[in-house]
Image 1: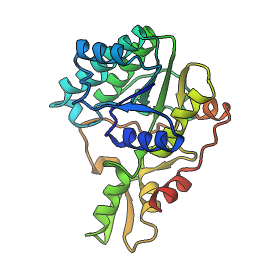
Image 2: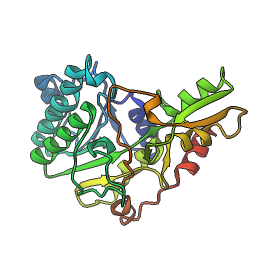
Image 3: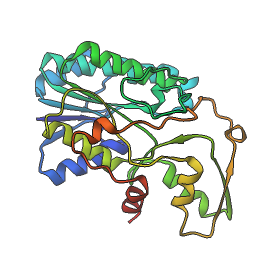
Image 4: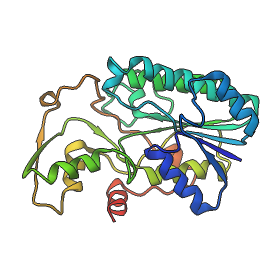
Length: 276
């Protein structure tokens, strides 16, 4: 049996559709069915269900809110919630797949991409709690996959692609930052990899998964709106001050993932597929 937390989120919804396609049985939960911040209820739910595999997609992802008014909730969900799920997973000997982020890195590396074993140094509250979640998973379990991802987009939920499209409906010109670089990730590619590591019995540990090729937010926006009349102009991130510090460069190395034999489309191909 497969258990999915955060089943109604952007990634959780994508994963549910993919599991359906694969003919795999699963139980999908959200905070109503299983409140991961409640240790007793989480333990009771998981020990009763006895899943062999848990996809832990539930997370607090409001990056700027996490800096102040959302700080307590961020900690409660990403740290305490992850601990509760990991402890319960251990109790039933389940494998745990935990989704993490490029924000565990500080973004100062310029000479090469971030490898899975590179030094972490989160610069914002969200990155800090996701890294703590990683450490809890590693300290609690032997059977785990930590998958770090970045710049997530997909057809379910809110994301950069839909934001750009919405803005383009009412504007002739958009300005987008061109001094932050990373790798966009289609939720479909991520969901496929989450199933792949289990199916192929990949070695446990940390993996990086995003789509191939890197870009700035400006380049990403240009590609999203290439078939419109909207002019996209590059600007420095100082023009868009945000509460949470974003890494200037968070391009992650995908070698460990591709070595498994998992084929990753470019972000341009992924975007085109999603927009179809």
